[in-house]
Image (tube, rainbow, N blue to C red; front, side):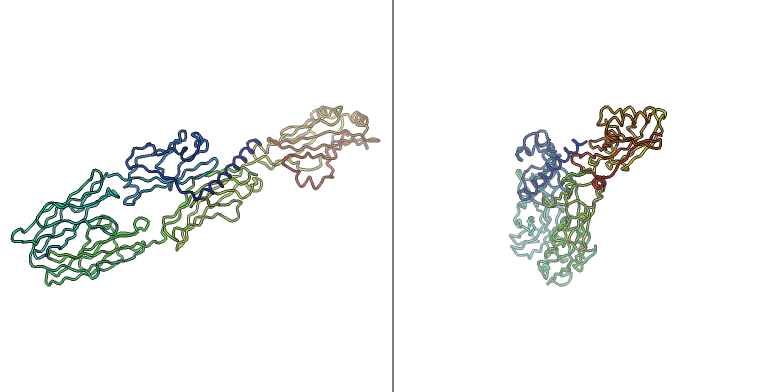
Amino acid sequence: MEASGKFICRQRQVVLFFVLLGLSQAGIEPRRYSVVEETEGSSFVTNLAKDLGLGQRELSKRGARVISKGNKLHLKLDQETGDLLLNEKLDREELCGHTDPCVLRFQVLLENPLQFFQAELQVIDINDHSPVFVDRDMLLKISESSPPGTTFPLKNAQDVDVGRNNIETYIISPNSYFRVLTRKSSDGSRYPELVLDKALDREQEPELRLTLTAQDGGSPPRSGIAQINIEVVDINDNAPEFEQSLYRVKIPEDSPIGFLIVTVSATDADIGVNGEISYSLFQASEEICKTFEINSMTGEIRLKKQLDFERIQFYEVNIEARDSGSFSGKCTVLTQVLDVNDNAPEITMSAFTRHIPENSPEAMVAVLSVSDLDSEENGKINCTIQDDLPFLLKSSLENFYTLVTERPLDRESQAEYNITITVTDLGTPRLKTQHNITVTVSDVNDNAPAFSQTTYTLRVRENNSPALHIGSVSATDRDSGANAQVTYSLLPPADPQLPLASLVSINADNGQLFALRSLDYEALRSRAASAGRCSGPEGHFPGHLVDVSGAGTLSQSYQYEVCLRGGSGTSEFKFLKPNVPNFQGHSPGPEIEENANFRNDFGFSIQ
């Protein structure tokens, strides 16, 4: 047990050293790797052993593993070869949506000794989706009085790929009247505008049917098509015009459904039915259609679905005002979602040591990371534990903490600690998350057995029957388990001629003392007198009486001078002058130290 305790102590010291070493690497730039989406699972990404400058088998020996936020692992580590492999086939669109670049952050944790390495995996997009028009059949009513150069916004296609794999251009089928322009919106997406190159003549050609093609920039490119039906109408020659071409609004993410965001307004110079305006969402994605609604008569835009700042921070909502004829106008509502503190901090435990040996120097108890989905002050975090515990919470890498012991623990003082880790953000109102762990202090054999009293006096008549129970001694040990098991034994006396072992025996389990044979007062007095250490009717012989040993390595014994005292037909064996051994690593208890000259009498009388 002692050897095991020392090994654990040394191991904790090594762990502490590498915790500090990991802290020194907190400012190092993360390692970056990349993989093409849809790559098969178990595909090779890199060799971590080589990248970290470690031996091939060192990763396995140090308990290397890959961790990520929420413990959702897209990667796996072959500890034998050091190869970092894909855990599964990755879909960039599923992982990141329209976010580009798509970066998955993870950490490499070496446990023995503890060390962190930050890393990033970029999932590279491939052109695996074609552009799609939400509305594949469009109807345009265009007045024959429209002059050349007039533009008509068309509904755009959508492509979930990003970068050059997203929509690059729009193409219109060959015709004599129109061409198409590819425009770029503020969010980077592209939409088509139909341009009239030649005046229309309803009488010559009352309607046109064109094919609009959306083509992405992939290699090879992918495309999607929609049909445009153009109806040439007469008379109505004024399009609605908005009071503002751009509206900017801000709305908290906790705004209720039905909340009025803004009211847009357009006018039409025409009169009668040609001047009647209806409002609608234009070029609206599925997300915008689910989130916003507009009153076709008043232009009021209201919230249709609960907002979530952590998902989407900005919306570009295009509004069309169309009269009863063929004309329409367009405006844009830029909606900024404001963050509110609606996400409690999260705690992820990366490593936890439940049992800590007592008397160990600073030992690692747990490694944890904290996070908050909110932004700015709402996402800033404080991590604490109770003040009255012998533990410290140390910050290592960004949002990573290590829980360590502040000083060596004493199991005999307290055998168990309940630790509450509290993570609080700085938002309003402040939200917090608590995680409770229980740490048990494992026993080390650091307490010697101690007798229940300092003096034992036993009396027995001579000519007693053999195996007579003459008394008991008792000792206890403050340790626990096997370390507290006590064994009693008689030690040989200093005088080898003294047949103490033939006179008295002790039960090793309970400390009961027995006279092994019938005692003869005159014979014992004669032997004590022949020793020459006591004068007159008294004789004595030195010797160890009782040894109390724990199941570990600590023991306590008392050495006494035994004197035969005669008088009144009785005799006492007095065991005097306790000799307390000096145990390595353990000093005698305060009770022993303060009574160095006390008189321990352990005797028995013969009457």
